[in-house]
Amino acid sequence: EHIQQRGIVPGIKVDMGVQPLAGGLRDETWCTGLSGLQERAAHYYERGARFAKWRAVLRISAEGSPSPLAIRENAWGLARYARTVQEEGLVPIVEPEILMDGDHDIATTASAQERVLRGVYEALAENGVLLEGSLLKPSMTTEGASHAEPQTPQQVAEMTLRTLRRTVPSA
Image (tube, rainbow, N blue to C red; front, top):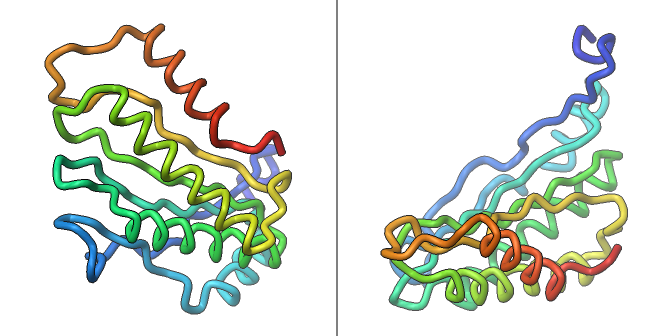
């Protein structure tokens, strides 16, 4: 009530954290928290929340991460979450976070992000999520944190916009 009286719209993080992904590559994870989410979301709405956030965590590695399995599992979790909280009146913030650990170049990041975002938007569509009633929290398209040749802010901005334009529906 204190927050709402000041014109601030409250929201809540609803995922329950990541777990190792069985069958995935080393260090791949999936996000938990779908069980009981419908009831929790209804309770959060009743208490004044108007948006929710769910974060999936993916990594880029020389071994091939993110694997198709990790992309599918995390995209599906994000989509099930988004549909569930929308049904309870909350705006879902969808966050397919790609960690920037590693020494890969910016083109490798862009390729991984495009695969992830395509998978996420396919899953959102399949689950009937109203895209106009959702928000994407994207990662910037940058080289890995240990890459020898850092990109300029202009290069990062251009690559990020290119990645988003190629994968995010206009809705």
